[in-house]
Length: 126
Image: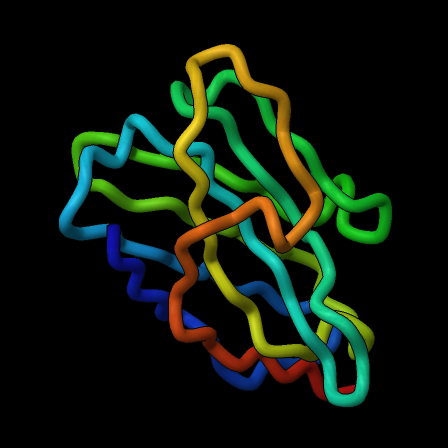
């Protein structure tokens, strides 16, 4: 499966952005999908993940209550709605996918995801 991320940009503190990631070349509903981010000089960090059917989600503590991950399997697209953005959210955001069984638990480890989008830059100004 190939992933194409979009929606990044420059926003002020407290603002909102919605990232999208559209898949092609595979059956999207067979994949658990997620978002990671990488700030300059830091390791890639798990942000959020969502199960194949969309019924289960997981978030890193620092975005809980501010970010919402969702997916539309008919459109082969996952989303990350980011509200109340902070300067520390500044990073390149990557969408990722891993093929799993229907009941698989979420993984927060980047090495468990075989497919990655190209990244989209989010900059939050103070």
